[in-house]
Image (tube, rainbow, N blue to C red; front, side):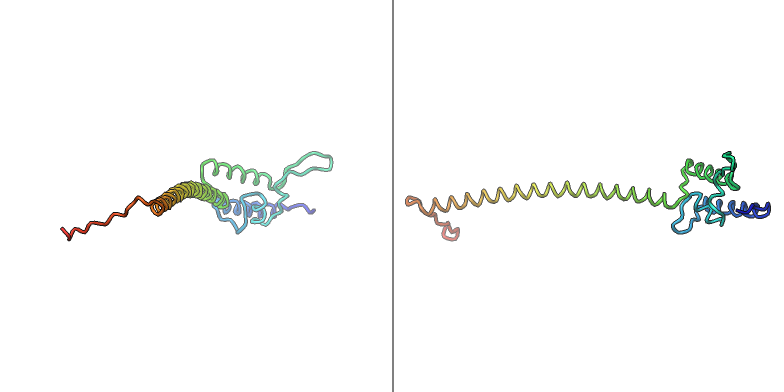
Length: 159
């Protein structure tokens, strides 16, 4: 890979800083995240520039934009620690978790109410069935008995 000239490296660093500021303000492209991959794509630089490299002898050297990547991650952590949610995906996840919990609570309350109504219905049907059996039993008794007489209703106008 060709070496970066000082001029190209300076231009790339300016592009990375501008992209960093945009991302930390919350100006994310659709589907983007607050990570080094998105930062590299926004700045138009290779992502590998944010990571350490290995020399042929096995020693490590800094990537050309590694210091900017570390600065980005540090600033992002500071914003998150301060309670400023910059990543709209994180805000959406938080909002959806809260909405999900609310819906679960509502479903639990409705299930509880359904159980109460089901118990009430079972009790009401049981009582109605018992009353029906009692009425049938009394009617049977009335029809079988010879020593019972039906009472006439008293008409108040006859008095």
